Image (tube, rainbow, N blue to C red):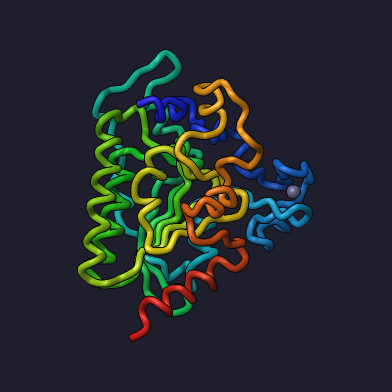
Length: 286
Ligand SMILES: [Zn+2]
């Protein structure tokens, strides 16, 4: 259960915080890499990519879906009413889980860390599920897992491709074993796509860590990642604390895992949509 500890304070394994600083400011957004300040409206025109250094800012689920589908107004969201519960009545010294859920729902205007639905990408109908790191570090609670599994089921039932964009610190400690169940459930549900011979494209965004990396995020027929995204199981900080050694710079980035054969390609956000469409056409051409 160690991996989920950081979710307590909304921080992923990698030390990536989901605190207020990580949520883009309404007017001016600082770049975490080059420290340049960019007007929010200018940043949105470049898909939240820093115009100076190319840093890919984290997206909300809504931004991600908007950038991927043909028409956001035609995107049909499912399971919004499937809302998280607090089965363990989890309370720690730092917080009450039920209160944290409400705070995150108010801040993000989401009811959970996963948004799933049906949309089209260059005219191809897909089942799309997107994780939002701003909601308790994108951690996998019961409902997050159930929404992902239902997105997989919809793809299988409708015989359409599945696309999942991951952004997560891993399991949600406050839901303990119920959270870990989701890793097995989502991995098992994915096998349904084999029967309908439809592809699953897994898109890893910053950060994708913990149990999400260890389950469905690594099971794509094609696995893509955004540049410089943190991708791995435990983040460098946790590994360094465990082995008492400094890790080489760049460990656990998308470029590092590409070099080591864990993913298929690193794709700039500006070409992600057309890359996905090209892959879908390749897989679904009759
Ligand atoms: Zn920058």
